[in-house]
Image (tube, rainbow over all chains, first blue to last red; front, side, top):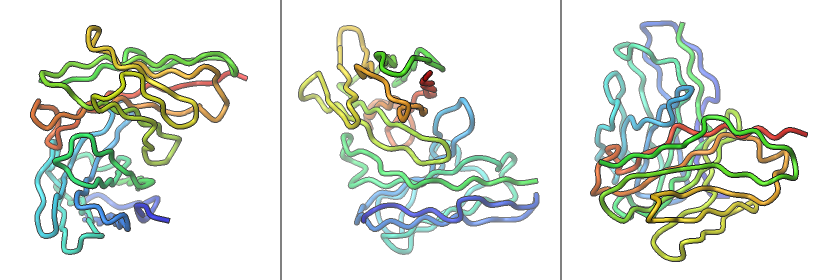
Length: 115
Length: 117
């Protein structure tokens, strides 16, 4: 079955530590995205990537970093510079970012708790 | 600028009765519109999409939505609610040329659908 796998499902970290969230897709999609979801706020875009070795900042990129070394993988690092890292993080992919009617396919998310 | 307003943060209906989740949008171009569903602690799943073809769009699980340009609305309906429909629903506008997020998408804040037995 094709899809997006995010791991781990739950992640707990101490304040001041960097943490990396994994996202892998086997849909052969070019574009990948990271969103942050907070209660009552919908989804906010952190970073996106249209092709391998290229990525762009989204609306709330501060305190986050990404890489896109392989088409299938788009890991997100939450750094100690992110002031409020506790949230639900969703990874998504689509066939082509430029096709405005191309729907997003989502993973099941990682819930990060930082204390 | 592009925007999406989901008019109700919570909707409660009885099992077997109709569901109406309201979405209004603004966009300077002819947008694509989507409805997604999210069950607790899961990712979002596409219910249906409108891409300037038929204005009445049928989706999965018996849901449908009607694009009304004059009213700038894209309301989601289902004739008969089932307990498994209890979830969060998001209306999304897509137009890379019309503002919104850096990815050209604007998400509504979501409507929590509660199904009473």
